[in-house]
Image (cartoon, rainbow, N blue to C red):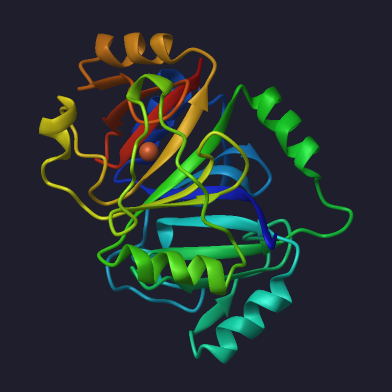
Length: 276
Ligand SMILES: [Fe+2]
């Protein structure tokens, strides 16, 4: 496989101090590091979650790759960055190199067919192994379970990750109680990174989703990162104490995965889950 893990997720905020308090104290991601003037990072090095206050809309300077739009992105580890770059070249899909210091290793940014900004980061032979990444996540007490990306044309977006990034579509693991679930490939694609639905979830927006599952939020709209934590009920209690609206989906879509949905103070949709 060319892609081995989610390297990081980056979200935009209106207010860095508020975002820091929210992700540090409420979600429980630990203390962030300030990595640039308007950017904080949870995790280690360029790995984990990055929150950035974007520069003024459409204000593009030499140090900005994509302006505000690029703040929100997902990055993947790859063992073959050159291979991905040459496949992008062959498909005439533009990409840019990340600026020095943006990642711990060389990386490129591109845009998938559904207009999601995506980065690919080279994993050097001396870089962390899968096992080392798992133990990092163990030390953090949280990890990125999946990234949900919205796509109007799910098949076109999935083909990009298969053909350009060398990923493979996996079989959705629904809760055993749900029986044999037939997933419509025009609505959902799972690009697997490990077991238990880890990886990229590409979905088409479905306006009926919240009603069908009695949710306050619609997690099929606009994409979301999903953070796995050790105690989802503790996260839920902290958020509710502060008046944050929660959709408690319980175990409903993924086998042995308790899921809640919420929005951060800048209205980024988030999923927090716990493997049970
Ligand atoms: Fe999700």
